[in-house]
Picture: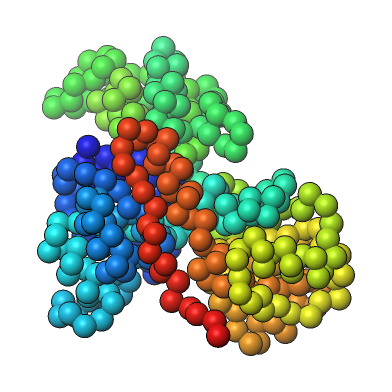
Length: 363
């Protein structure tokens, strides 16, 4: 098995297409054709994690955070980024980072964080907008079913809990090929009119290449006419954060004790809130100040995230705002990736790092 096989699997749960523009996800060191001996999964890829990988004969590290985030100006040893990268390259260890590609996945970081609290009826807190694409093409009626099924098989036509979604209407197509053409219907220099069906079908952006390949392969025409537009709809299955309800309402103090225990936080920083009973809870792994208003508009009684600044705590008055710590909010990512890859590659060594990579300590 090669690195590219692991990447293809990870693309299923966390397509790189949806990573944020500021991020640096994907394969950071190593080659895609490297034969993989074993995999170490880590939240952060520090030098100590590379050492652990070497000790356990693992030459692929799947990390949540990218060790290379901004541009490297040199590779001299002496800082934690360079030290890890140099050792990985020296010993032919590949490093792959998922970060915000997994942040926005429906069953990604925040959903696992929500599941730890046993939240029910989960939905995405900040779903992506202007994401869904729509393909319109025109197919001779005799070939319509073949083309439509090919597009379905390529992943088009899926909306939420539904698949095989499309819309069609009948019309008349017209074309005439020149002397260099090779028409599937009619002859060169012949003006052809025939019954066609206009097919409208939606798909997600990361599927565009395979959808167009399926269209061109299944369509009878030498030159296929189609158009692609982006819809303004929000898409619930891709976005930041999650929101749901507790199995039973809790008093504010009970809720604070619960999240401190569940996330293993030494300290929970929180706002003062007029809400004394907590039922509806929003969560977002990592730095989540940007979604405070989203949580408020969604009617959350409490919002659990990390990296909040002083003035952030002034924003909500009818919502309990809680900072459980960055590492603490993302810690379940390791087991999420481990569970996923273990199911995909059941006869392969996939380990979670034993290195404590949380840089924050409490006195």
